[in-house]
Image (cartoon, rainbow, N blue to C red):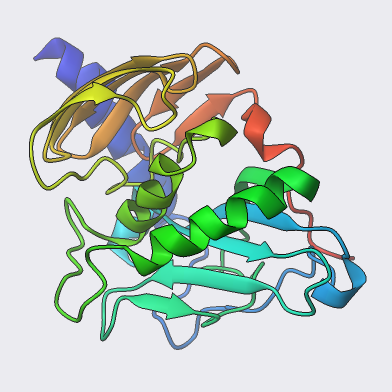
Length: 250
């Protein structure tokens, strides 16, 4: 009980207290969804590129969770393509927002940034994973424990173990699975035991050590040293898959 208190309840309470004093939009309609101006026009960026992004979500869930999405373009393409999953209508949305748009007013952070020939090689797998996403019908979305927006992006990453990336620990829903699971982690660099995304443990080079309790994740990262705390996400060195943070244009 003391371990649960220290690793899960205290961080959540602390993050909720900080969240209460943040200047946040009161609802969907008055939130800022505009581009931060970090990605150039696709025509001005000739090489292929794939980005996995996340931004803090809105409402009370914003105290502990982020929303994730994927953005890509082929070499020579004149448009970026963005895919999200949302909780109304048909869940999978294409180009509903700017590729580097704010989410509920929060600037996105980079989970993984793949460029050049490697990006060109994985784009067909990204598109296939989007087409084959099994929870793409109206009514399939479930906020907790999933399938939600983070479950969608996690499903894509499971098809791309070669990029050695994982969603941040506060991407609640990323560990959702429709049945109990024992096997390799999403990156293929470790092992995982998972009970519907509600209870689980991971040990791997990319994932580090993670304990999941009710969708909240605590642990630490070995590859890029950092603590993982519910609500806060990673606290430490940035993930090496991010390459460089998206910086708003001045």
